Image (cartoon, rainbow, N blue to C red; front, side):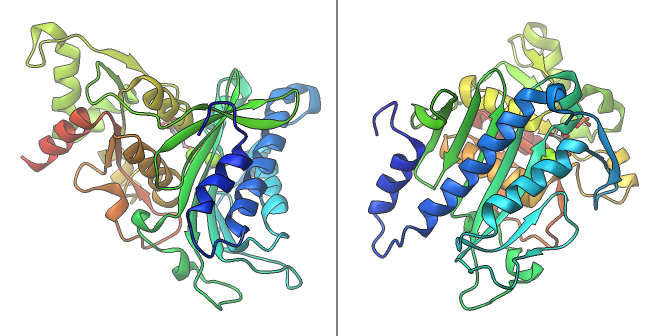
Length: 336
Ligand SMILES: O=P(O)(O)OC[C@H]1O[C@](O)(COP(=O)(O)O)[C@@H](O)[C@@H]1O
Ligand SMILES: [Mg+2]
Ligand SMILES: [Mg+2]
C-alpha cells in the first residue's frame, strides 16, 4: 500500500481480501482511531485542561490511578460501546468485563485495552500510549463472559498501540505485517508512514529496569551481566541501555531500530504472589503479535508468549521481546 494512504483506506484494502467481510472490522478500527485521536488531544493539552495528576482511586490491581487512566478508559468505552462492532470490552482499569448497555447493538468482536500505558510518565511529559487487542466474540452470545476472553494470543484478529510522543503514531497488525501510521493533526487522519516494518535480528541495545537486579533470576543476571561486560566479555561487543518505563515507547523504539526489552519475573514480584509485572492480555499479547509480525520474538523466558492459555483477564506474565537472536539467547539461558 502506498505511503500516505489513510488508516481507513488501508483497513478497507486489507479487508477486501476476506470474502464475506461486512465492514464491521473497518468500523471497529475507526472507533479505536477516534478514541486514540481524542486521547492524543488530551495528552497533548495536558495541564492546560487539568487532566494531569492522580485520581485518588486504585484500579483492580491495587495501583494508584492517574486522572488520565480514568478519563482515557471512559473515552475508549464511549467510542466503542454504541456502534455495533463489539460484543464486550475488557480493560486494565476495570475489574470485570464491561457489558454493553442493553439497548446497544452487538458486534462480533471483543476488545481488550490498556487505555493509558506508562501512565506514571504522564506528569513528567514523557511518551505514553494506548494498547489494544482484538478477538472474535463467541457467536450468538449477547453478553460474553470473562471466560470468552481467555484465548491465547494466537487467536488475536488484530492488535496495536497508539504512542503519544513528539508525534502521535498508530501501529497496527492484522496478521499480515506491522504497519505504522502518523497522525496528521491538521486534518485529523492517521496516514501510513512505515509499511511492513522489520526488526533487525541482532541488536546492541537492551531495556530493563536495572533497579530490580538483585531480585532477578539467574538467566537474566547472566544475560545482562554479559551485555554489561561488553567487548571485554563473552559477547565481544558493547551494549547501550534504555529504560523509559513506558512499554509502548520501548516497543516503538524496538520496532524502529531493534533492541531487546525485558520485564522478567523476579523474587520481589513473586513475593507479591504475581507471575510478572506486565499484563498478558492487554500488554504482552498485543505487543507480541506486533513484534512477531515484524520478524521479532516475544517469550516469557520459558515459552512463546502467544501460546499461553490465559486464566484471568488481568493475568501478569514475564516479558522478553524484540530482536529475534537476543530474545532466543535469553530464552535459551532460561532453558539451560
Ligand atoms: O516502574 P517500572 O517498574 O519500571 O515499570 C514500568 C512498566 O510499567 C508500565 O508502565 C505498566 O503499564 P501501566 O502504566 O499501564 O500500568 C509499563 O509501561 C512499563 O514498562
Ligand atoms: Mg500498561
Ligand atoms: Mg495503563
